[in-house]
Amino acid sequence: MPTVAPLDLDGHCVAATFVSDIPHFALAAGEVHRLDHGHKTVAAHDGLLCATLALDGKSLLTGGEDGRVCAVGPDGSLATLAEVGRKWIATVAAGPQGAVAYASGKTAWVRFADGKVKMLDHPRSVEGLAFAPKGMRLGVARYNGATLHFPATAAKPFDLQWDGAHTGITFSPDGNFVVTTMQENALHGWKLADGKHMRMSGYPAKVKSTSWSARGKWLASSGAPAAIVWPFQAKDGPMGKAPLELGTRGNAMVTSVACHPTDEIVAIGYDDGMVLAARFADAKEVLLRRPGKGAVTAMGWDGEGRRLAFGSAVGDCGVIDISA
Image (cartoon, rainbow, N blue to C red):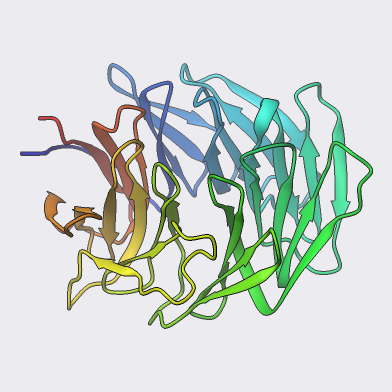
């Protein structure tokens, strides 16, 4: 039976993840909390807007209302990577070879490991950032589509068009597909080899959380009373195929999803605070956490897939140990 170690905090949890195997919780007020032989806290920002785990898993990259981009280490160390003045850092992304991307307004920046910075201007505001799994390629979600940049070269950016507001972006683990979340209740995707479009619609609510399965065969998403899991095994992705619907509940909406790092299992968080795990192969479910005080807003597995950190809109956070 899974066990839950609760951590009662105050405020909206932006990210829940493991930094060097230590549970970390980034809250909107600006503090990053960690459970390392007790509860410890570091004040990272005056208002924290975004956070993501570095690719090596050894730091948490954060952006705030104070115009700073920071790296929080597992020992509570705080390094300022960039400052953009009196602008809000709305989104950050972790890249290969220590690169970090961040954005404010219509501008995105890529900071390389040697400290050099490349500025990328756009005609409309940058809503989401993601690096491709191979090479130094950055995807930008924007109004009416996405833009792919090659920030280490002088190559021109490549535009992927689709009408509407695109709010987030992700690459498939094999690099063959780009998928964006939209302001409308839908996902949109492109097959990069030929530019084919992939429409993934029918959600009753906005999709605010997506997660790729360990081998990239599935893309799980929130925005419905079940986790909607699209198949990406075929060369054209999910086109013409129905998604899996896992963890269906008639009286609650899925607000967060996190695929297991090795197995074809997804953790599903709901707007009432409940967390389930469901298996893709047979839709078998295991209750990980009973309903709590607020909607689940963030989840993240440790490297071994034995522990799941979670956080909510009102700060009731914790760690679930599924090996117990």
